[in-house]
Length: 442
Image (cartoon, rainbow, N blue to C red; front, side):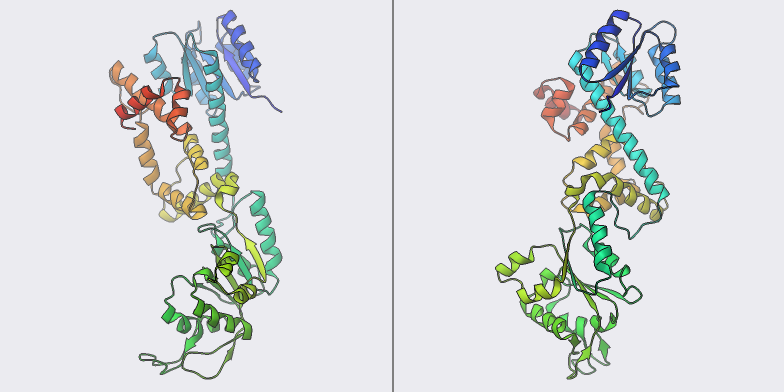
């Protein structure tokens, strides 16, 4: 297993040696330098996972090293070491792009925690950049089933297998998982692709309108029926009918639907003759139909008619490795639609996306990405951070206050707003942190 690599720069040879030993004992690979020039030369050959440097050194100091590295290796996190009481210098370092800073003499365990956090953020940044490149180099993909998780790979394979089989399909999955997208993909990969794909939202059709919507009506069947009209089943002839949320159908309507599926005939309201239909039925359900059958809420014979093949769509929480890819994909599509440029995803935002439960699944993630494309989400985040790095020059007390606020916000973001964990990261009592959170209005 590859060890994370740390470049450590300090002109104090004793401190350099002791710090290097401690970092190596904690599982890192360390390359030590007693001056910044040698570290910069080595960066031409090897790029570490994080660079740690003292600020006050003869010749090229830590601030100059930071500035140079930010230009030559913008993705490399830099942690600076400052002397006691040099808070203003630390604030300047953070504004210049330092990942973090430690005040000498620093706690050895805290140093390791800072290194782990910096590397984790750097890894997240690299993954976000990689995924955004993947999304930018891919086709439009508006109707594609996006994802690299094994469950999604298997889903695409199952769709490809089932699409050519002229059998009814039942798609099961939680709300927002993309069941309709799976249904459309089945249709598009089938021999019926050239014919209509007709979605019917079973939960939205009033019971009284069910027959006329699905089966049609004859002229004079009721007041206002001034001409014959075919229903959705006839309109979809040769194609696919999607019965979305079929579990929402009332029992009497289930019986009428069952008869049509059994006989493959429809009878328009107000007409005595039956008309043959040639459609493939794809139904979706967000509930367990077996349980509904056991509770006498769904007909067993209808279930067997619908479920010639069953396809399960996994919830987003079970394919968390796809979250950032999906987010970048939806953000790109939304930005193009709104004529805006996709915002860069900050590492903290990536961590937050991965930490959320996503009860609304892919649909909820898509909504979040579209909000980001409009600048809504990001504006709120920017305000919550306090914009310490973009604040105008102020007095020392104001600088320290803004910097302290940004550190607390970062710790809260990293910990998923867990105050106890944030207090551990900051190494302050929980009560003190709670008081500061209230003070800064976080």
